[in-house]
Length: 130
Image (tube, rainbow, N blue to C red; front, side, top):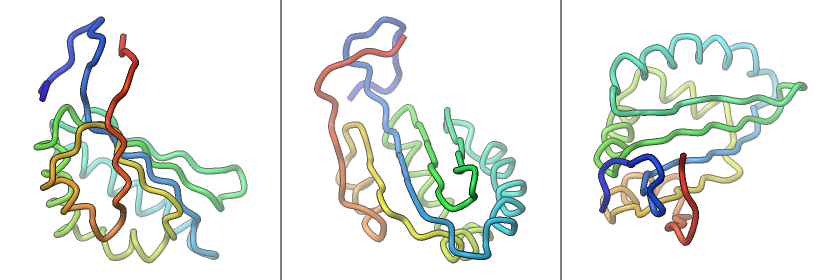
């Protein structure tokens, strides 16, 4: 596995999570408040997480979360941190996951860590990252 990406690499391998969810009715405002605490905590405690962004529909009913990690180890670190996070319970109570895709060469260990949420792993076929 390629642990990091070189500019112009034809098969740059990273692990990315794309999570789509519905916001539980009545939870949008408290969820946004939770994110104001959670995102800086993830940024401070997970130096290898290279992208961690939330997107919400204008009506506050749908959510997309994109997470990118340079390798399986960083993604596993994130999953282990989420498992003991003070934010996890409220986070999961605020959303209903509709899809969770792991794009990249996920290890068996990484797939085991996301098992409560998904089994959808899509290894790379073609493409590039600039």
